[in-house]
Length: 350
Image (cartoon, rainbow, N blue to C red; front, side, top):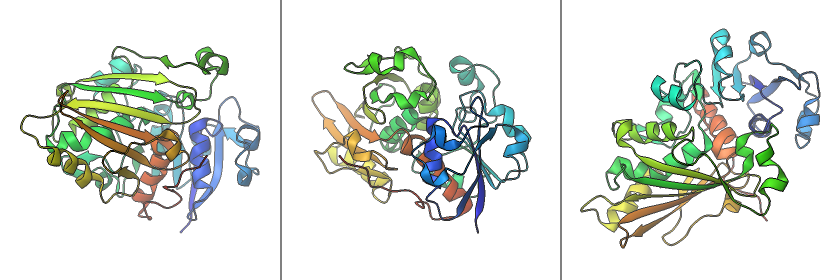
């Protein structure tokens, strides 16, 4: 069976990456692409690397144009998806790459986003531990999926095995991330101009203000039915001069009485059978270059007994495993297709 697809926000980074992956998907027909201010223009003018899709023209983003497809991807700015989802009840599967349907707590939404609160959907991180197993079980046959925030899923995947196994203390997590500016979207912002980011590293959303914090707390709490308030995290992202990528360094205290073998086994047992989340051999740590273009999260784990902390370093391509790859992987699961279809573990080098 071939599934018809519409992608909104198709002129942006996330929408473009969704299209790049879907263009190689044998079960997908990309029928419609939409935008806002760029409607009426050829897609190729905004995504010149998508040569196989040069025949498509950006249409207006309206419920009438998005309706009638088997799958709709919403790659819109935060706070804009909710206005469409209620009007798309006829669409069998909708995947939202924005934040509108990620959070289960309205209080958390009000504190970090504001505006209308929308119904939470199945969370699109298949490998994430839950109290009942893995998140992929909640994606099978799902009709509505919330793709993750790139920083949030990277940190959550980094620490979920330790929280679930009880080998780390989740009340004192520290995460510092080097991130590429593509995660902030394609709209022009002075602080993201090349002249502002080349040759420097710029911290932002410092001091517990980043919008992905409640998403991380929610994901980690779900690993073993811990209350989100019991997950305490100091989260600091830093923009560095690379177009794509996240390198997340996360640490947490070692739980009393835990052995080194138990710590490493927590991560190995969680990800040993996974294709797209891989724990590197002891003493090895990833680079963002290793995951460029791949739907892979690579992580290295260190046990620092002097500081009594576990350190996990995880690298992802924020536009693939962090966003579009997670969305397509979740789509495959929901439709009953092979989970890795149109996705790769191989990066691009040099």
